[in-house]
Length: 398
Ligand SMILES: Cc1ncc(COP(=O)(O)O)c(C=O)c1O
Image (cartoon, rainbow, N blue to C red; front, side, top):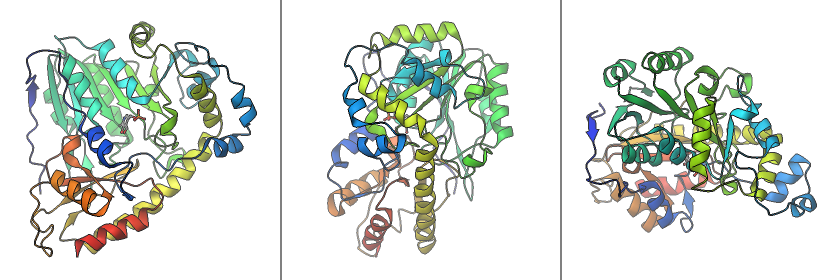
C-alpha cells in the first residue's frame, strides 16, 4: 500500500498572519488525557516524583526548599548549560539556550529565522508545532513526506533535492521521529546535511527522543546534528527520554552566535528566563541522565515487544512498521476490517479514536492530528500499564 497523500508545495491557505492552524494533538489530549484509563497514545516516558529524582541524584528536599524564587539568567544557569553541553561532542555551554519548555524552542526558532519571503521544507508527518509555526510565518511551506516501505519508513533524499531551492531558508526534521519511530542511517543523515550545506539552508533537528535508540548505550547511535552541521539548530529537553515532562525543561543548541543572540531577543517576549525550581531539578536530572534514559529504554523496548506480538495476532487489521527508535509507532489500519465483527463502521481514525476513548477509556492518537491520512494511529510505548492497555484494546476488536 502506498502513502497516498500527495507531496505538494503548499501556499498559505488563509489570508492574514493572524491565524495559525489548530494544534490538533493538544486539543485531542486535552479532551481525554486526564480521564482515560488506558493511555496508549502518550509520547513521553514514564515519569518520576521529585523525591525519587532527588534520592537518585543525591540531592535533598531541604536543598530544593532553599532554592530562591528570583529571576534567573535568560540563557540559563551556567551549570545547567555545562551539563547539557556534555551530551554533545562539539558544543560548549555558550552554545546552549535553556528554554521554559521544549515546545517554546520551536516557536523561538521559527520567529528568529523566518520571514514572508522564505521557503521552508518540513519532514511529514510531524508533531504539529514543527509544521504550523513555520507555515504561519514563511511564504511557502513544503511537506517532505517520509515514505512507507513494507517493513518501515524511509527518507526520500532525491525528493528533497527537487524541493530545495535558493529561497529555502530552513529544513525541519525530527530524529528519532515522532510518530513513526524512523531514524536515518549515519550516511543518510550525512547526505541530508550535505543537501542543507550545498543550499546554505538552516537545519532544525528536533532530537527530543534522542537516547531512545536500542544501541544508544553502546555509543553506536547516529551523531547529533548539533555536532555535525554548523548551521543547525537542535532541540532537546527532559520531557520524553528522561520522563520529566512536568518539569517543562528544554534547550536549544545554536552554534551561530548572532542567531543565538537574536533568538534570546525573542525569548524576552515569551518567558524571559527559566523557572528557578525547574533549573534546580533539571540539574539534578542531568546528573543522573544515563540512569533515567536507561529506565525509559527498558520500558520502551519491552512494550515494543508486546506491541509487535499484538500486531502479529491481527495481520488482517494492522500494517505494522516497527519503530527503529523513539517512544512512538505509527500503525496503519485497514478501515474496511475495523469494527466488522461489531458491525460498526468507522470512516476515519479520528472518528475511531474518539469512539475508543469515549466508549472504552482507551487513548490512541489519530494520525490525522500529525498530518497522516485517516487510517493511521500513533501508539506510545513509554508508559507503565501498557500490557493491560493492549489487552483492553484487543478486547474491543473481537
Ligand atoms: C517531536 C516533539 N518535539 C517537541 C515536543 C514538545 O515537548 P514538550 O511538550 O515537553 O514541550 C514534543 C511533544 O510531544 C514532540 O513530540
